[in-house]
Image (cartoon, rainbow, N blue to C red; front, top):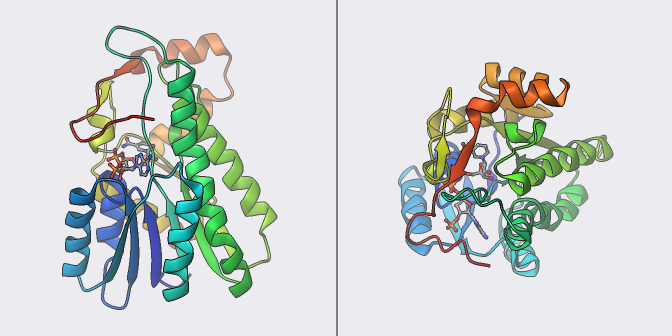
Length: 266
Ligand SMILES: NC(=O)c1ccc[n+]([C@@H]2O[C@H](COP(=O)([O-])OP(=O)(O)OC[C@H]3O[C@@H](n4cnc5c(N)ncnc54)[C@H](OP(=O)(O)O)[C@@H]3O)[C@@H](O)[C@H]2O)c1
């Protein structure tokens, strides 16, 4: 697969999305970076420009599907997109006081993580299909394979992305448009700062970006890492519930209040 020249990354203002933007930045590459926080988005854009890429930024909430579609259509008209990485996401779940999530939280998490990613996918898909080429990456999680006791909607959103992405990959076979699902383990980011609990085999965002880019270049269906946790997650999805809960008991966590600047608001 040839190196992508026009790339849109959602959730590019922080963590894995920012690291992916820097990873792909090079002369001759156009990057469309989406996020909400203007200052952080501009800092990433400036790093990317410094590496010789052309950058356009957009402040869009992924829950606003029309705004997402409009921004993507405008970028695609100027720079026919060959890679979309739908990466924006939030983690919410059990709080410091042990309260489990309510409907409002669950709807917000599903709205951003699952529906927001599908809004981006369907915004770019028609023109990719018309051109007969393109690649779409949905950033899911190893949580897709095993229900998360402390963040049910987060796990459900990621399981939804895995299922949707693999179904779309099969449905689009032969069209020239490929779909991959990215399933990271723990990666250092603002998100994992709010995850209060064990984080075995944690990777840097830059290392995660390299693994994701390698998997995408190979057109992998599922890009799961680190390998040992990926295998553990696959096994946990097929063992009896009691064994799964026993083996994952050390991984229980709660979610701290988000960093300042992140409202987490509806
Ligand atoms: N870190 C991990 O260990 C890990 C593991 C597995 C999967 N993942 C997945 O990787 C992706 C990136 O996570 P990260 O760890 O890099 O987290 P992060 O540093 O918190 O970055 C999250 C990104 O998503 C954007 N975002 C959040 N809500 C949004 C909304 N409503 N509209 C538009 N953009 C929104 C944020 O933009 P603003 O801040 O500008 O709003 C930010 O750019 C997520 O989908 C996450 O679930 C992460």
